[in-house]
Amino acid sequence: MVVVPDFLIKRIYKKGSLVDNNGHIEFTLKNVLGPGFLSGFGYVKINETVYSPSDVKFITQGQEFSGTDISEANPISFRLGQEGTVILNGNGGLINGNNKIEIEVYNPDAGKVYLRVDDNFGN
Image (cartoon, rainbow, N blue to C red):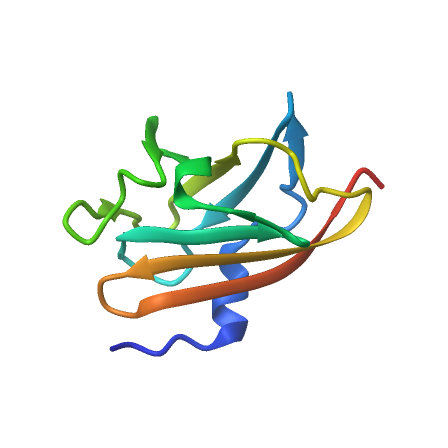
């Protein structure tokens, strides 16, 4: 298993990308680490609201994936420099000001990867 330092993982989140788009929370991830794959979403948490994989969509390279479509048996490529938009079903938990975001994703080489960042919304 590969261990990725937390300070590198935080760079995956594109700061300032947090938006409410017609009742859905969206933000952008960018692979700055190297060639790789996503093999699942565990959850996304905005402040105290937790979104399960069925509440998550991931759009990258013009393709849209449900959080439940991405799995160890069906990983998706996430190349170096590639961006993807995470769309959450609903906007619960989002507040004006600083928001705490936690994402659990799976990578075939690193296993569970936790991304914890803060981003401002509406100010």
